[in-house]
Length: 94
Image 1 (cartoon, one colour):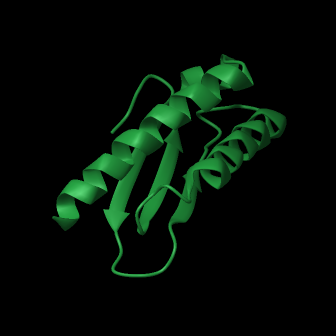
Image 2: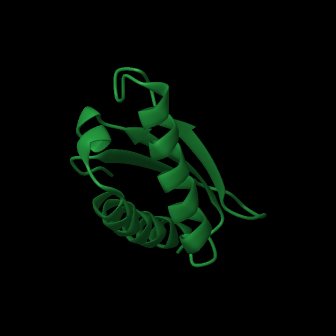
């Protein structure tokens, strides 16, 4: 699933906690400062939502438009993606 800022890939796991993978490239954000900011926002969003997420592997990929957005917009985008990914994995388990 994706929106204009991020792409989220979710794969179910049989046990254990939710795990996060990141792919934030130079193409997405040219400077290391911008890439690190995006990674911090994604990690913090995952930390806030991982308790509600079903066990799974989650990979977040960045899109170039994300680097220009303020943190509040990034957090809102990630919150929506976490919710959609959680529903998707719950449906796959049933």
